[in-house]
Length: 233
Image 1 (tube, one colour):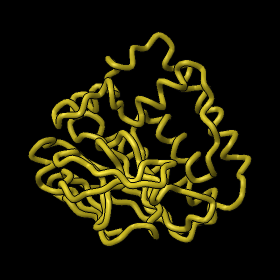
Image 2 (cartoon, rainbow, N blue to C red):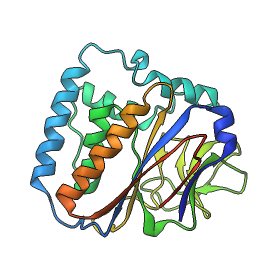
Image 3 (spheres, rainbow, N blue to C red):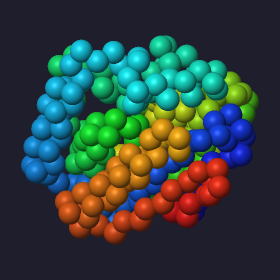
């Protein structure tokens, strides 16, 4: 299995890059009190950092807003996952605990102000890729039971069967969401070589270390950019 970013994406976003972290044979069934404390503490720190910050003009989020506009996505109507998360935290709303693996990725996402996905690898069919959608593509929204058609030209994560995220880093599918039964997880960390590559690499390194510490699982790290558009999962 591979993670691939299509050349058509780099033509639209030349400095796009993705940090990749893989967790294998993870036991996500148990509630981890240490992760819950770390998660809550990071929310508090992030809340303090974001006081009086205009998120739409934040140097950390502006590259994502500009990239979305470049590929025809309205960032005001469809904010990136990291902007939506930070907006909730900034307003003083505690994020819910989903499960240990998701909480861990969310706290790293908040710490580095980076969007981070999480996909159950056993629910993937073939390779997972970032590309522009085609008219035959379908998407199952989170919490829904009926698939919806996707218009051509939407920047998406996908496998060989269906779309995994709509509008790039806006919303993930119900298929492949991380549950207590998930055993193998693909974490992509989206960024840009010219603005936050070092943060992407640091976030991937820290996430891998936290996964090893708290789950004692096997892990792998990778990195994809225009010069290296594929990573073996």
